[in-house]
Length: 159
Image (tube, rainbow, N blue to C red; front, side, top):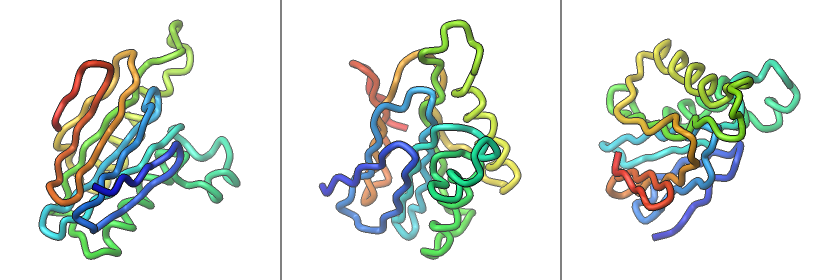
């Protein structure tokens, strides 16, 4: 397997069956994956914040930083590779409540809410998710098999 690391505020799309898209340390950040099993094309993004309106210039430079600019950009990249909306499998992970014990900022919750709204407006259903809680996650998407695993501590889920 060829590991393709998706860092914070980054995204990747692959159609190489031996690629493994991986993102680490999804705390309040939101990891979104799209997979087209017909074409075997997968995409992943690691979004930090919900709305780009807090820094429009930063969003222009790094659209993956924000859910409202990154998720549409990732979808566009998938469509440019020939993916069809009716085939896309959508899975989410992260959006935890870490380092916010008093629940003042609720960044994870807001990331999740903005993403759901974007997906809903685009008639894209969420197939699986592992969101919330108070722990960070590592997400792996195997392009050849379409298998997604979410790991947190000793816990590992196949979504």
